[in-house]
Length: 113
Image (tube, rainbow, N blue to C red; front, side, top):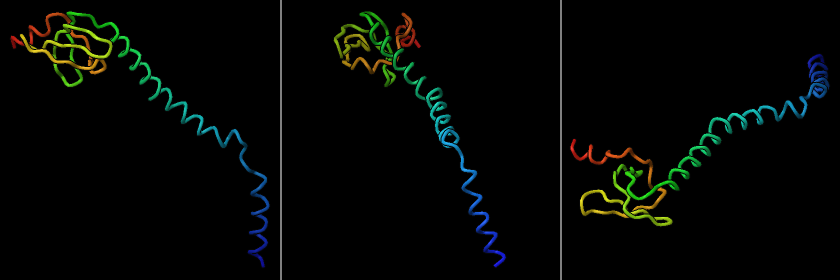
């Protein structure tokens, strides 16, 4: 009988100290905020920079593709770019496959190496 009364007293006291709604959702809100500032926001920034880079490509630019191919832009379309990768050798790639614009003379330096 002694143990039953202690258990009943603990059960009645447990209801009085329930956490508030804010204390329940605060950890979830903090996790979301950390995820936003560490993962989502930097990714959005990178996407905007890549879109700006792709829109600024002009004829004669030397570019590197995501596959690591270097080439000079010889023709531009809305979604496609023609790259000259060697004398007389051209390839067609999608615009979003261009990873970066290289400094002028990069292809010449690479061929000499």
